[in-house]
Image (tube, rainbow, N blue to C red; front, side):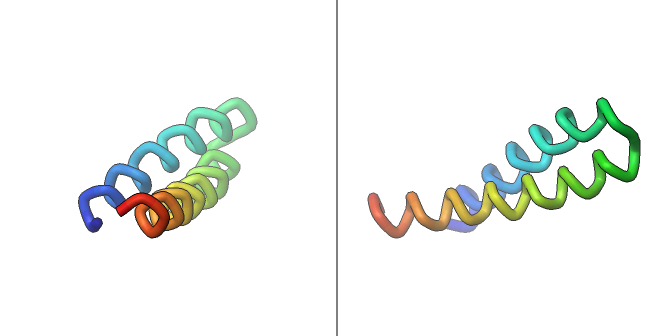
Length: 51
């Protein structure tokens, strides 16, 4: 479970950084944080349903 959350944080943060970097560095940081939280939430929901 922790390993899956680590993957969710990494992937969500990377996608958020990639999207936010088109605007600026602060936006990239904020969107990356939101992406990391979304990654944890998605992994948590999927693991509760399927594991």
